[in-house]
Length: 398
Ligand SMILES: *[C@@H]1O[C@H](CO)[C@@H](O)[C@H](O)[C@H]1NC(C)=O
Ligand SMILES: *[C@@H]1O[C@H](CO)[C@@H](O)[C@H](O)[C@H]1NC(C)=O
Image 1: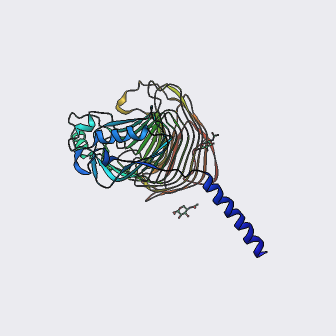
Image 2: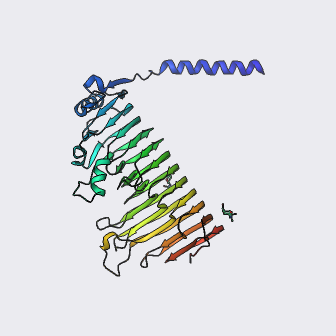
Image 3: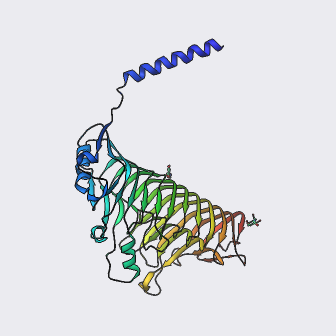
């Protein structure tokens, strides 16, 4: 038997090595940004050098890498365009840091700092983005007249994207945005901005599908992850969020977002620490139509979270909604299962749904949320569903 096993093993390994010889080993063509004039000295503007490296890599058909060695590279806002690329996948390997110019206006005069537009096949690996957002936040917090600021990294109309092991620090606005993208995988990200920094959402997505975000840490001043209008098939797992405003579907139903559909979203194994919200769905109190359906919130740990579970269909900052209007967004089939930990407020569950389109198909299963002093309670308006197993605080669903 021993000999038999050995000989079949040998046959298999010979076959494997033949196969290996037969297929041409992929030779990686590497484009080092330094060869295109970039300088990692923290001072020299390397924008044009990065664009030249991109153009060169893009024009090469085959397996291509753009390499950013150790150092600090100053970039002004730039767009990497994929429309003419011959490559199937570009590996963007970053050992260094990409930093913003010192004057915040250099980024803030644009909406986005680093943009990938119409790119099909990109793998960003490693790297640090430091947008130096503090001086712009100081302007905003001082109620001066300030620009809105730039998002640090944006993917626009792109597909087959992997972002792995990237760190983004102190963005002016959102750290990472996806707009009309398909098949995006983000893993091992570190997103850092202080608690009080305005609008520094971690990842914001719109009109995108097949998005997975896993094994990542978000410490920021706004939503850790937010899903705007029209996102389908989103998977979020093994995330730490806090400080921040939590993980949010919405806001939806602003004017102009007619017919938005958010569907098939799973948020699993997330720890929230000291956040404003945990798992939130938020829609404007406006008649704009749309749907949120088939959402699973599974296995979350809440550590001192102000609103651990919240549906707010009466969102209306600065009182811009005429009285008597209700949200036109229909929320259905949302499951909360295995949500444990502590609420920082006496209301741990809030389902404040639209009187015109009550929430239906809500499921609460295996929930245990406690509060420091009193035992917390739940509050429902126009919310229908069921409970399974033990639910603490007791459910107010109809
Ligand atoms: C839901 O999304 C996941 C990916 O997040 C996907 O694998 C699955 O096929 C989707 N389900 C449906 C019914 O589309
Ligand atoms: C809920 O959690 C508290 C605090 O961890 C614990 O004391 C209590 O036994 C739990 N209740 C249930 C029903 O599991």
